[in-house]
Length: 185
Image (cartoon, rainbow, N blue to C red):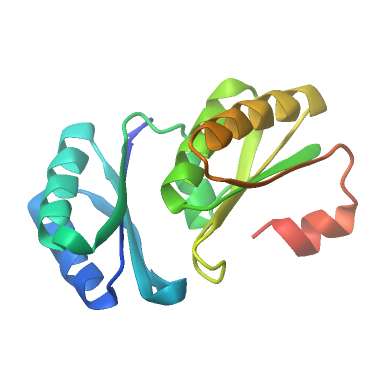
């Protein structure tokens, strides 16, 4: 599965989130990436697989979630770095410039990160989604400065246009301690 589809449902109920998760994994053969409560009593479910399977599971989850669904996302052909950046399994050989985009929602962060990753040769380092962030989310990207600037500009444009941009920063030459103790899993 080189470029899987990614599905996400965010709910305003932990109890319903657990029921929705069960419906998602029972509906089609998808891989459950994450299912957990987040700040302010919400619940986020992330899963991936073939596009048709993710669509089926997303539909089942949305039906089960009903009016408790806050947001949802179907991202077909997610960039290959998206899932490792969410699950903390990225492998970065060398850090260069660092860019950070912070958003007010999980879905907007995932879409912004996907667009950033597809824009240049910069590599996604990590993505943190809502847990411990008051419902906000952010991603970190690294690479040559020009690549990071291009990727961050693309992600920023998307986040601004959707009204979800919370922050945007670029560090041309990060200190090694920031890498080893601050932004890398």
